[in-house]
Image 1 (tube, rainbow, N blue to C red):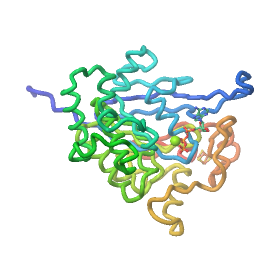
Image 2 (image 1 turned 180 degrees about the horizontal axis):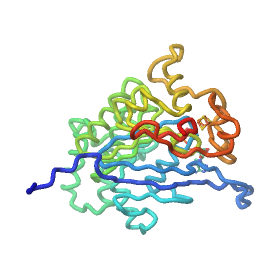
Image 3 (image 1 turned 90 degrees about the vertical axis):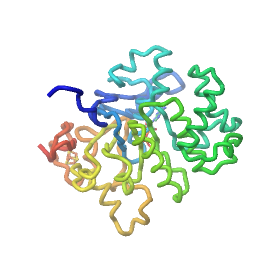
Image 4 (image 1 turned 120 degrees about the horizontal axis):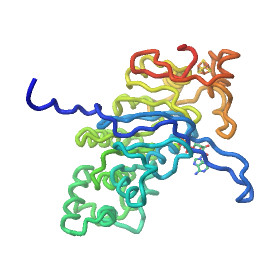
Length: 335
Ligand SMILES: Nc1ncnc2c1ncn2[C@@H]1O[C@H](COP(=O)(O)OP(=O)(O)OP(=O)(O)O)[C@@H](O)[C@H]1O
Ligand code: SF4
Ligand SMILES: [Mg+2]
């Protein structure tokens, strides 16, 4: 065949990859004596494709935000590496990191906390452009208005002069999303972007993120506790437990055929008719999440796992198995 190659589909190409990533926080007594480490992320491998939306789920304290901040370049890995568009973050100097932060937008959980209260919307949106060298004021203003239209804060004139406290929670989060978008990023990382908002606007904000992601073919990685809506907003899910990714698959495959006992317990809790409305946070399986200072030997889930096999699960750490095509689960049951 001659002529042009077929256009690359979204999802063909790796944008970001992580190999054997560890993020440990040192614990010190009296400010200097090292007494241990919190292993917030402890051996994560993953690959995110250009133009795909992925969700990270897992109960509180399992390392989701630590992973997100490391992908954003805000935490340095204790071991392992983050590679973005073929370049390792560890190779980047200060200017390289500044450029990287322009290419990856960040949407935080608490929009009010993310927005300096003394800046109006115009200044909040001009600022990143100024920092990244857009000197022409008219050009900045054009881009600011364009991005306000994109996040549906219209007409822009109605919002440009407002301060964060004059906006509703949903409008504040739209401004945060506008700030994340204004430098034309290739990826957006959203850490529980709707958990602090009224239930009535949660789906609206997730739909907005998803629409922007699809229109611009961005990679979107978002953290959520809400497994019941994830199907509509992501193509793949990563399930985290105690600093590790224990299961990863396409959303439908994972929700319909969960393989790891931890994921099965999370989903069983979600379908419990006594558990309340569909937007509540996923209930955790019985038992306590393990200490990340001294995590359990073998499989970290073994003290809570109804299917744990003595002599195996408490001794040897399970690698990733592939019990279904493209569906990985770190559990000895798939051996
Ligand atoms: N800067 C830090 N210094 C010390 N420990 C930290 C730091 N950041 C996070 N941790 C610890 O690392 C572990 C993982 O925290 P992380 O915030 O990543 O979890 P998470 O999955 O995002 O939880 P949540 O769902 O509650 O937001 C926790 O034990 C937390 O206390
Ligand atoms: S490896 Fe063992 S303890 Fe861990 S999830 Fe599988 S069966 Fe349960
Ligand atoms: Mg978190």
